[in-house]
Amino acid sequence: MMPGLEMKKEWDFGLLYRNHDKKALSLELEEIKRCNLDFSAKWKAKTEYLEDPGTLEQALDEYESIAATIGVSGKPGYYYWLKYQLDQQNTEIKAELSKIDDLGTLIENELEFFTQGISRIPVDKQETFLNFPGLFKYKHLLQRLFDSAKYLLTEPEEKILNLTSKTAQGNWVDMISDFLSREERKVLHESGEEKEANFSQILEGINSINKKVRDSAALALNDIFSKHAPAAEYELNSVLHNKKVSDELRGFTRPDASRHFADDIETEVVDSLIEAVTSRFDISQRFYKLKARLLGVEKLQYHERNVDYGSTNGKYDFDSTAELVSKVFNGLDAEFGSILTDFLIEGKIDVFPKKGKDSGAFCVHMEKELPVFVMLNHTGRLNDVTTLAHEMGHAINFELMKKEQNALNCGTYTCTAEVASTFMEDFVLDEIENGVDDARRLEILMERLNGDVSSIQRQVACYNFEKDLHTIYRSEGFLPLKRIGELFIKHMGAYMGEAVEMSPGAENWWVYWSHIRSYFYVYSYASGVMISKSLKNMVGDDLSFVQKVKKFLSMGTSVSPRESFEELGINIADKGFWMKGLEELDSMVTEAEELARKLGRI
Image (cartoon, rainbow, N blue to C red):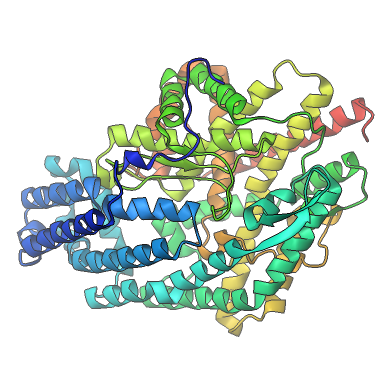
């Protein structure tokens, strides 16, 4: 345990409400509604803000104030959403969330006129607004709104899409997630006994170093995915159709173009990244071939792709994990360390798995004036150590933005979101690697490579899978379950190669992959890892460079991603930048191969 530090290991909802009173929360939601509708009533009848920059500054200042404090659902919405992540079978929470979603949609529709009106300010007047000193704090936002005009529908049409989004996509996706979270199976436990396990625990089981345990978990998952695959077939086709309709209405000519526009990144940049990584799938194929040899098998089963290589002695309880990550963060920058300490003692991290809790890990922030929270499912693996570093990287990113940006600039583009998280991970792995012998160094290097390959090659393979899904759906129509499975096997096999067997049942493992329901954002994992490695190398040469990294992390959406990276000396439009990052990954695989030979492991 960190000396003198009393850590809370569950979310402290007192940070939002000291006493949970359902009636009081309902009254607060009514106040949120009133505040937003008052803003709408005040500005909807006016046109001066579309003609005079000074008046627009006043309107945007009021809009920003609402966004900073209450948004469209405020503390009540945040509270119920967080509670749901811990108890996904609670019907009362679901009912409250549903009502809050409806309120949010109503408010969004009421405010649609405001950003729509700004977007449609005539081109010949836009420069006047962009160059008005009082609007400099909103300059990039205004430019983005002006650029969006060509993709906007009429205000009534936008309202219809807002109103139907829940039934067209949201409910479908939530349905599959809910089905999976309800599942429990008897699986083999590390103790050698068969025990009942929930979905999150079963997922964790496939990473066990004990082959019998992971095979038992894989059988259970195959059964679960097979059970829900027919429903997921219709769900995914509905998601694909919804995207097709939206793109056609808005005039996006490629399925991934709307993602690029939303992320403020040029399609050519993303294409360059995807092409570069796809051309180097040989790197991940070599990695899996090495892992198979180290584990003493000719081929890994699909579910074994993430299994740890090495001894079972490297268990990390949460106290020692927090201490290690704290040491690294403080070594980089005192503010990084103080932010982590605050999260640990204030109850902003929910640490351990529990029944009904969402699987995986995340960091979430809502309105600027509300606290940031992190969710983990810590079980003591080395991967759990890097997960804490990863999610706290996001948290640090958010906290730095909150300090420097107004609420309308307090967000991250997808292509910048994963930089802070993977940046922190690498330094933590460096610390773990310090002073260890060659055998342990090989284990850590394989863990590092597993994370990098999963974030770079695997996510690009997923992006390619998504492209095929959308393209084929648009040309052929409904995609049957077998066809979806074939495409999944094709793209997963492409990056893993012959050393990983796409074993029976693997064709259904897309069922739980939430990424493909969020449309093409997975490229950001690959870009984030490679950019963060570049930044890490710069910090390695000069620790004071961390201050530039902090400035980058505090920029939010006040400038474009390309501009923010250029300030760090990175040109993401240069394909050579991505290839250089891949060469570094290639050399890491070579290092692991040489170390394995030196130790006589292959």
